[in-house]
Length: 537
Image (cartoon, rainbow, N blue to C red; front, side, top):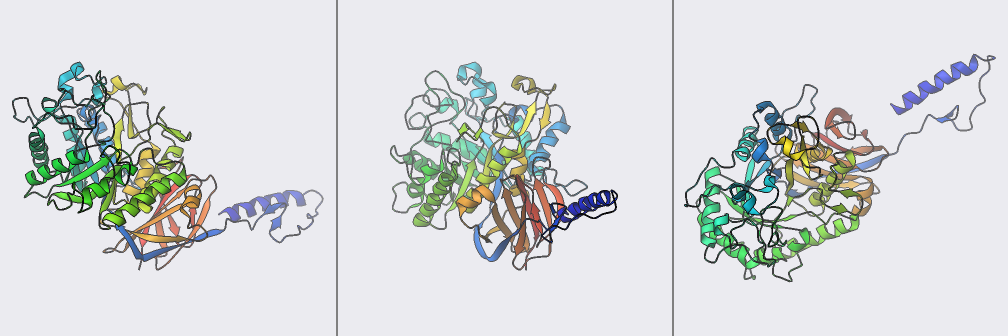
């Protein structure tokens, strides 16, 4: 295409030149040069070999959470708008031109509230959007009409074929906590739970899990951080020690006996808490929970999943740090138990990220989408994550940690004005995530790739990141390419592959736009994420 357009330019220029005196221009010294234009110029193709026989981890899922905004958005009167949000997150349908309507999440996280919403201002959680209802009433009975908005999205996910659901808890119900609040303001390291209430808390989570039929239950979230102070907090949350998490998981496993629901630990606040940072008995969690010689070992519990989970926040820059953290994580897994799955269960753009990105103000452009794709790539390729999950799926805030955004009916960023209606807005974070989630389906296996002249992860992070996945039953192949540079790249796929691929491109102009490409001639636009789908032999 580039060569033809240049030739056409040259032809017009030549006709004009010859019309003035009937002479032709002097020849250029190079056969490729024509009137000062290099008509032979074409970007060299990078050869990428897909090693379909060299299998890595099996992909479980891609997910996101309902926190905290679905309590309101799920109760909107406008069903069309609610369904549009659900389609963006969950749909596997396509438009007439083949472009996906949504990112096809395969796991949905449901926040099991602790009752701060019923407390109102007395909860001391300043923002009412960050308070949550509780199914357990003070008299010990259950009210399953609570969390109606969140329940609407849970059903919407199931209706659109989302394969897995996960319930997660940030705090025990307020009637069980030491301070009567849904956060631990003590500054200590232990659960905000009254003495003797661990069994009761386990009964509560097991009952909710059984009622909704959650596939997974995550009982503790980011236990390493301090949640609130004596005067208030930003959200529900509690600290917990490794001993407490171990004891709690054993109780929950007993209560879930006879069900297919599995417990997932430990939702570490940063990935490095999984392999180090155990100064206060809240780190080194791979070893603590899955080394048979540990006093906190839970790997033998029937309803504890063989999974360790953590969050990728604050470990993503610079590139060498991102690579190093994930390399150490995977090395620890191999050392303790090579069969242990690793899940990344929360991510969003938070705080100042090496001066390149920032949570505030809201940014929905392609640079932020490319950053998300970079983190995804490294979590999958370096850390061998089998599930990757986002934090806020929908948000009205002027912040960059969501997939779908809601502005008020006038189009302004105004949190209070979106409670009953609003304008649904997309982001490049959503569609960049979709380049992975929509096409890499549960059960697919990652396979090794070899990139000509570029197999150093640090080099790839700045130039071209490539990963590939296969479905052994259908012989489907998915290749995801992330090009963070402004210049276009040309790629030639090699291996026992089909000749043509569907190409889905997300860049500044497009969201998973579908085109066709030949395996030996693939163009990756500058600053884009491209997913190729085809077959292998």
